[in-house]
Length: 203
Image (cartoon, rainbow, N blue to C red; front, side, top):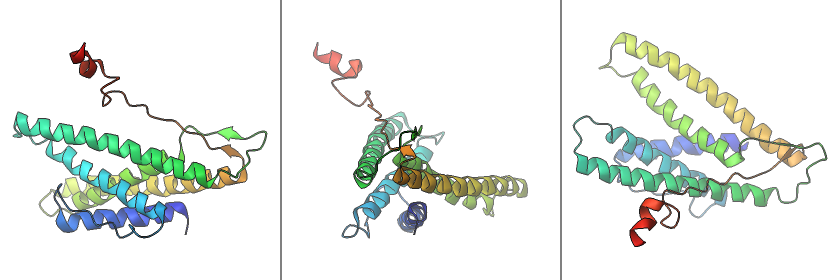
């Protein structure tokens, strides 16, 4: 099975598992905890995305209290950092996996790492799941459902294309026609030593 097929299968499994409980404090039980490292990482990564998706929905409630909104914003900030950490850990996995590959003299660079492309694939899985819900929501108008059905078709096409691109990227890295490279996020706002709003309090 290709990497993209493995990812898409696990992403769907995560989203289905979450919606069996369907609340942001849902308990995660990773079925791959004692299995291969890659599958475990993919499951954990999509679980973070799924929880954050629903936190992003909640924080947009028009009647949310400022106190609750701040608490959720803090959770989203923490989730974003965990998401970045997981993606970079996944990139480390790919670097190790392709450590024996030798780029050819005319090998090119890619603008995106394999793991960040897989990150986009995870978000696409969530978009497809929830757009499908809207396209079939009985309480919505016929016009709403039709518009969402068109959007759903577009998202599915995007997933097909992105899946193919990920597999091609990994194949080209293995063949040496693409140089595997990393683009560390170096997020500063969560770091007390780098965010002046956090470290200035000690000055």
